[in-house]
Image (cartoon, one colour):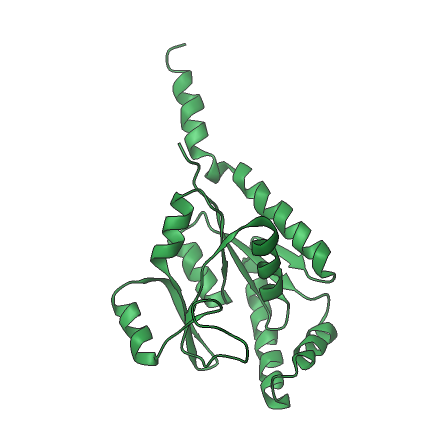
Length: 205
C-alpha cells in the first residue's frame, strides 16, 4: 500500500526568502508544491499556472462558493487561496506536498487537517528583513513600509507554528528544511497504519 504523503505549510514574513527555499526543495528533492490562486496582478517574470493561478475577484469568489479551496484569505487587499483537488491527489499518491501560504490560511488548514505541519521561515533579524525587501528593487518605499508593519503584526503568529527555521544561509536552510520534512514521516500521527498493523499482530498471541 502506498504511504500517504505529508502536508507541510511554509509561511514567513514577506522578504524572508520562503519562495526561494520552496523552489530549491522542489528542484533538489522533488517535493510537490501546490500552486496558489490569487487576485493580485502578476509581478514581472511570473507566469500563469507556474507561479500562481491569476484570477479575477469574481472567479475567485466562485471557487469559494464551490468549496474548491482548502483555504483562502485576504492580504493587502487581494485574495489568496489553495486549490483542493491537486493537494489531495498528490498526498494520496504518496508525495509530500508543500504549501507556501500566509499565516491566516495556514491556521485554517491546520484546523481542517490537524496532521498538517506548520513551518515558519524568518531572517535572522529585522534589519536583514528590511535589506532583503529593499534589495528586490520592485516595490516603492511606501509598500516596503507596509510590509514591515505587517511583519511586526505577524510576529504574533510565530508561536502557533510547529517549527521556526532561520534563513540565514540559503543552502544550509534548504538542507535543514529537507531533514525536518523527512523526519515528519516518523511522527506518530503519520504512522497510524503501522500502529494499527502492529497492534493487530498481537491479537492472536
